[in-house]
Length: 299
Image (cartoon, rainbow, N blue to C red; front, side, top):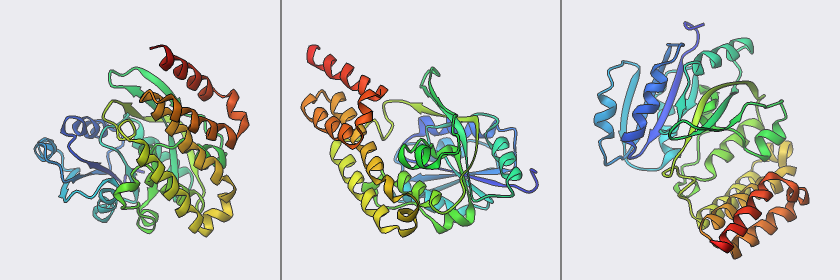
C-alpha cells in the first residue's frame, strides 16, 4: 500500500512559527511514511522560514509567497503537490500517528475514492479533551451539509478533484470558504468515512474563529448562501437545507455577542436561530445560551 498511495499534506501558515513546528512534527511521527508535507508560508513576518527549514527531513517542502489568505495558500500548495491525495492541515492542528495509515486503508478498501473523512477530537492547548467527532452514520445531509461537523485536516481529497474544486480566494470569506468547498464536494461525490480518531483540533485564543467579529460572520453568511444558490448541482441535491446552513451562522453570531457581553444583540440572533427550527429551543445549545445570557446579567 505504501508504494501505491502518496499523500500531500498542505499546511498554510501565517506568523505561527511557535505552532507550525508542532503540526509538522506530529506528521513526521506517522506510521505511514510515503507522504510529503508542503508548508505554504503566506507572507509571514516572524521566523517561520527559519524554524521550518531547520527541520531536517526531505519530505518537508517549504514555500514562501505574498500574503493572500488561507484559501489562496491552500490552492498554491495543490499546484506544488505530487501526491495522489490532498490533506489540508491548519498550522495549529495535530495528527495522531495513525492518521495517514488509517486514510490509506480506507482508500484501499474503497478503490481510490474521490473523498474520505476520518474521526477527530478537539482539545485545549494543555491536552484536555473537549469532545469527539467520531459518530458519523452516513447521513451526509445532517452531519456534513447542515451541521458542517467536518474538520479540514480529517478530510482527504483526490488530487484531480482538489484541482477541479479550489478554495475561494476572497480574503473576506475566510469564515465560509471551508463550508462552500465542502458543500461543492459532497454534492458531487460519494462521502466515504471511517470514525477512527486520527487528528485533533487544538483550541486556543489565536484561532481565527475565536477572533472573528460580527461583521465578518454576517458577510460570510450572506456570501455562502449566495454562492450555494448559484451551484445548480448543490441546489438539486441539498438546496432544501439552505435555511439550516444559514442558521449555523446565527448560532455563531449569538455566541460572539454573548462573549462580548452584548445580550441585546445575542437575543436577536438567538430568536432567528429558534425561528428557523423551533426544536432548537430544547437543544444543548439553547441551554448554553440561557446560562451565559443570565451570567452576563449578574457579572
